[in-house]
Length: 190
Image 1 (cartoon, rainbow, N blue to C red):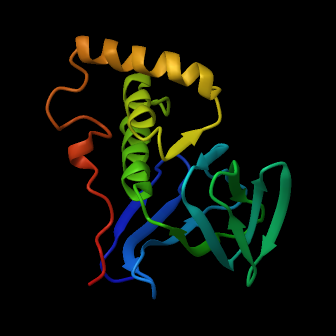
Image 2 (cartoon, rainbow, N blue to C red):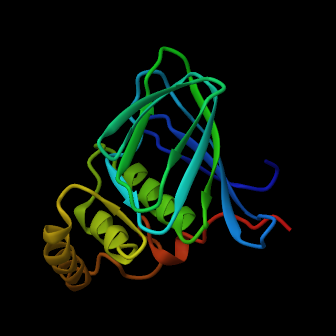
């Protein structure tokens, strides 16, 4: 990829490169290349309500949970994470995991990931601020979600945290981790 958004999780070493492309039907797709160090966890259990993901393993071994099923995909293999199905993935091997794939349609996944990586990387202790995490998860709640805490708790707690964050001026201006203005997403290939 020549023109892309690169994200790196400084805690796990996960690297993602993303760009928006149009498929043959004119739909915007998020093309993703990524890597994860050996025996490292990727994202926690999560769901994309409207996006399906397809991934090809270029090197290493992908471990994944898709719904209740656990799978292992070796180099040269592929995996599918359907829209609306909870999933997580990790590097199940002793070598660097290298992936390429796509999220269809692109929706806001790039901005969501950009915000989360920003929040995760902003914390020197490795424990991100609940104010910034709640803000990201709450504003993307119609398209993406983490499974824990349960959605019923998130619907009550996250708006309260965001409300308190506003009172405490946590979201003043555009220069805070994960702010909407700082998360413009991946460039679109022309």
